[in-house]
Length: 442
Image (tube, rainbow, N blue to C red; front, side, top):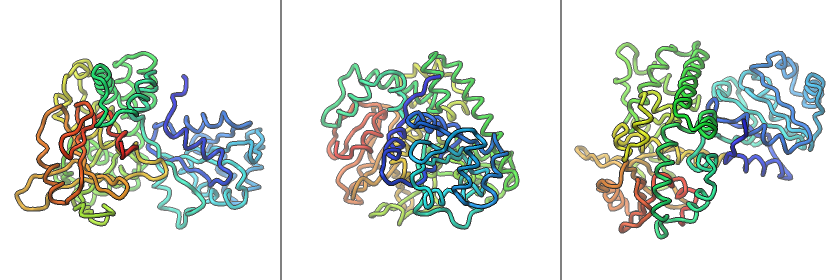
């Protein structure tokens, strides 16, 4: 199956060509394409050495005696019968979270053999970090990877000209109507199948929604199987229950009491934390948003949670894809929570790979008020509210209230409308919300 280009490819290629580089650690949930991206980069080297410490556990002994890089490299080279030469070989250590000594050795590659290109990857890396007192700060650079974004999806589908044209559009320069309608149709397709690479590749190849559903079901079962790896720390059945509750409460403040009749608050909280660590859910935290940084006024008692992929979301609800694909408005698909989910994870995907964003929302804290803004983002030195609509209509009362109360200059409305301007509100099509975040001056 051919490789489908990803946003992270450019980051990896810049790293390869940089005169000075740190060891790279590619992080993200399982099956988001980390290994494939590194293998694609490996084509730019004379030699590519890949070890998977889950599939090749016998290689763990190479890292266990000590962290002497010269010895490790020599032993790996002989074990795999491939030369490991600084400047000519890419050494890729996959599923590194399964070998603590290998993680500890990463910092010494940077110190003792800086000319060698070394990349590690791990899906459950945060769990391993808890066991390491000191982790190569200043010597290792993390790059975070997510499922396909909308831009990556339409490029994979062969619509490169469409993707490039969208980058030239703005609230002051809307896309022409025929293209807007095409982008909306592609948006619905993408939201329904999601951005998991195996699913996207199948859709690009066959266009079969049925095949996509089967793959999504397999992926969901894989995640449930992975939960068993946390068994020492939490009840696997409860983890599944919490995972489902997060999906069901999309778009709402997460309420622990709605999760289980048998588990207590701390047990549920532990499960939520583990799902965050595994990269399967993202927190959206309330902020008063009176100034920068937004995190300074967060209230972690008030949080929403987003599952990391819209395809997994719709598979949980077992939506009829054929009917949903031809729905004229997103609000027909679970009352608009779908749109809010999509916007949130697109915001995550638009962040620099080396600097993941923390998502925030705003709700008026005055008793009896129901004013709420879906997302609040920082753009340069500005704070910008983002309100998401599932169709082309709807009040913007909360958005106007936020701007009036805080005194900020403008807000963003993300909807199924074309680009446009309404007073101090800049309108972006839902499919182009990431474009705003990548080009705040557009």
